[in-house]
Amino acid sequence: MIQKPPIRIGNVSGATGDHPHAMARMVRSGDVHVITGDWLSEMNIAWNAITRQEVDESLGYENGFYEQLEECIDDIMTRDIRVVTNAGALNTMGLYNKVRDLCKRRGYEDSMIAAVLGDDVSHLFADSNNRKPISVVHLDHPELSLDDWGFTPCSGNAYIGCWGIVKALRAGARIVICGRCTDASPVMGAAAWYYGWGETQYEELAGSLLAAHLIECGPYVTGANFSGFKDFLPDLVDLAFPVAEIDFRGGAVITRTGEGGGHVTKETVTAQMLYELQGHLYLNPDVVGDLSQTRIESIGPNRVLVSGVKGLAPPSTTKAMIAAKGGYQAEATFYLNGIDVSQKAAMMKNQLSHIFRNSKFSKLSIELYGTQAENPSSQQAGTVSLRVFAQARKREDIEPSKFKVPIYAIRMQSYPGYHMNLDFRTMEPRPFMEMFPALMPLSAIDHRVQMSTGEIIPVDPPKTTASYPVLRPSADTESPVDLLSFGPTQFVPLGSIVHARSGDKADNSNVGFFVRHTDEYPWLRTLLSTQKLKQLLGDDWYKTDTRRRVERVEFPHINAVHFRILDNLNGGIASSDRIDGLGKGIAEYLRSKYVDVPKIFLDRGYI
Image 1 (tube, rainbow, N blue to C red):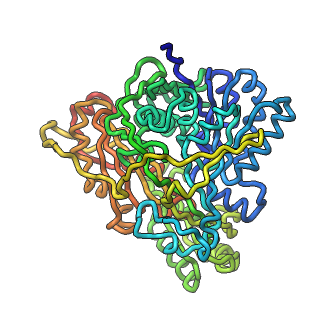
Image 2: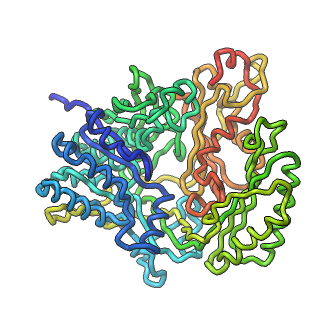
Image 3: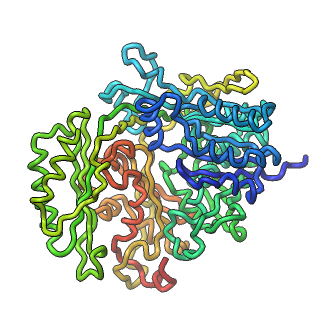
């Protein structure tokens, strides 16, 4: 039997607002069968909910996808490339109709367009008195139900799987528009369509799941957000976008477009694999990928082979993100420089506490960012910022007279050298959303495909499922070594020899660490215990509940240790008061913390 050549799938977006011409570049130099793109995150799900609620109900999709498609649709049609996207966001039919109109104007009226629907489950939660009797509990705290939340849902979106995409492509769709499918669904759907996989081919599906995870963030796997960036710093300009070559067994080679800077290496792929994981098991509504034995191997310039993922039956539930109007927020930033910075900050905090003593804020954060510089080379080098962030449930409690006016008024009573950000728009109240990450049964979702022919294709939930515990396995290393056995040490930043990457999922942080050499791994897995991570977090560990759970797992074949820190982001990106609400800087902070590193490892060279 002659096997098909590997399918080449190129990703052209890792988030909303990514490179505006990445699709055209992928068409020119990617040599791909299918173009995918991930335009969604918890952040712009909230933004789109606000847009539909507060601005225009006909919006709520990601127009950046449409603009890219419009630029190169002629080449896409000429080259017989399929396109699958989740840019439908909270208004899939709005984008679907816009794309159909584009095809008609360009002379492709006969080309089939499909919309994958069912992710919008808002109707299930809109009225607490008339909700269907389905089980909806918190994703990480199943003892909490949606009724315990205390907010009125205004939208809800379930993370649907890949089989609607598969059915759309099998029915002849050239362009498939999805809403809140899983990040991996477009790639998985393309691979399953191309090879004709069935729903129980778990090994193959799991392989495509991992491939999708590796390319879904675009340039993150070609050198962006990478702790080893200095190795090819001059090349990190206008980065290339990634391509996954997936074979009929689900094995994958990660590569890149011919255009653009950056590199695909064993290390960039390892960093991306560890990004935003939830432990060994990658849960997905179509398959569960066991990543514990994953191997990553460089097989040539900009070509990295990924293997070893095991496929398991999917769960009977999927994640849903439920949004509610949280209220309004505003912020201001003051700048402090020179000597006595901590005392200047204390003076400012005292004044702010006084003017806000009778406020009805639901959240008030006053935080100093940076530390006083000794003998700075310039005023800029010696400047730190004091950020004032407030939220209120009602607009009138944070209107200008309650926030902007009193803050600006104290400038004439302030610390020596007072100056502040004069963009007063940040002090005007603007809406924010609260998010409830939930688990809900797949059987409650009306997953279906709308074809441009008028045909409606139903998509059934998986027939075979398995149960997976919410409380994920976690343990320190089974076989610690004597750290003194590595000889003399030097007290230096952990990142001198350790790579790391961090991210978010809802209110949780996750961070993965790995070393370059196999003989360094016993040191890493012994050093980085759960207790050591808490110690390295320093003051950040004590800012919220110190009882919060930390989960730890090891990935022995890639020399990695991974942590998930639950309830660490003060509510998650939609409502967090953290300046790094996505937790992307946590890994670099931890790499900057000093530990005793064996000199024999340092002698090999610093990262």
